[in-house]
Length: 252
Image 1: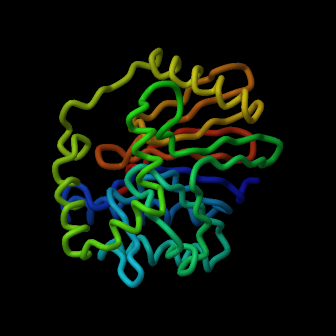
Image 2: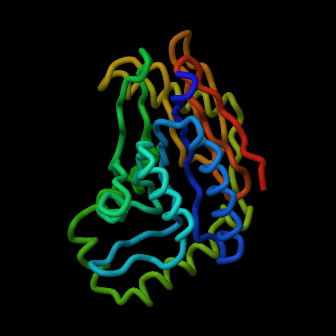
Image 3: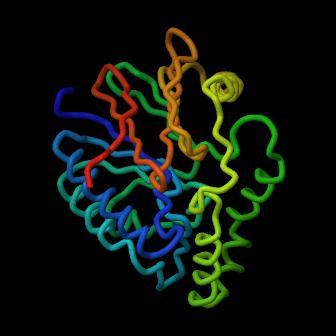
């Protein structure tokens, strides 16, 4: 599998906190995709690629054209791309499927590659607690909520979303809880217990959402990876057919 690798990244949060920093980050992402296309067979974008996204019937948020062009290029070259809905871009519908033949994943993706079993999920709504968010997620993903938002003119709807992005804690580096490896391991073990009860054992759990990069061995068989985020860092994971590595992209 030397030239047939799997790549994973999440939480680009394109659009936050402003146009200038988002454009710079987009160039970083495109340079990373240019590099991984040399040996990638599959690329997994594990949620919150955009800080906000809503597909109106005939309108999408402007910008991000360099990323879209690169996704089209990679897809046309035969690289399989998966796009996971995150809590910031849960209103991705069919645009990426139609334009770039990208597979959109609503929740988890379970797959086997080279004798290894993967559980991949953005990570929002998993684990115990956070009942309020889980209820909000169910409402925001409802057809009724999407119909309501579609009634708002794009200038207003996207304008409100961009304002929220500019004030986000992630963008401003404020009040971000940084977990220790021990606390992250406890969360991952508790979450994996629920996943295993429903789906069985896995070799790799791959998630984003929590914004802190970790690679933690939960057992002799199972490894948990959190992919971090790209607003303040630029981490990604690579599977070479045997091992899963967590790496940082440094190239300008």
